[in-house]
Image (cartoon, rainbow, N blue to C red; front, side):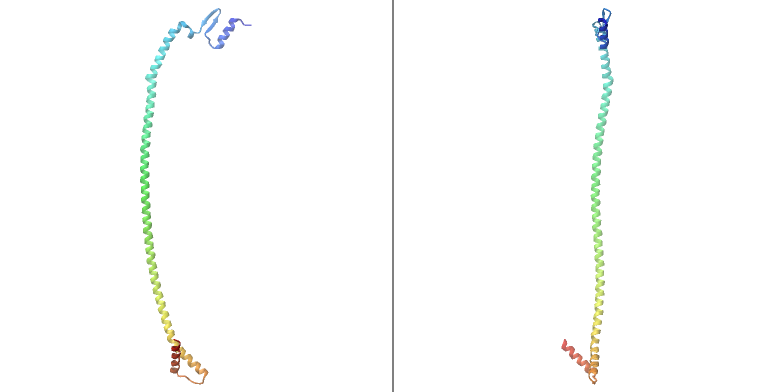
Length: 192
């Protein structure tokens, strides 16, 4: 079994550097907790704090401030550039849309002009075709009229010849051509 001092020493080592160590019957205090060294500890704490504060105030904070200011300036510059580019792109889009509308108007005008030219050309061709057809129709009607007149003029001669032939067949009498023509003319007048 362990003695009381061994248990205390073991307990002190287990705690990981506790304030009191036992060395025999005599107690030794952990140096940071020793009240006799508080003044020198506070002195060195003040010097260390002052040096660290000086380094932070003169070196670290200005550098961080400069970095933040550079970033802020860069962000402001980037935002200004983005705004300028946005305005420029809007102007380009407006110009594009205006040119596109103008191109559409021109295309419609050209299409309308071509449509009018094609319609005029078709009307001219139709007129020429109609006049050609009218000429051909007039010519055909003239030919038909002349054929009809010729046929009608020959009908009297054919009717006269047919009457002579019929009378000659039916009766042993000979008919004079002038008499047959007069008989055909009488029948023709009665029908008209």
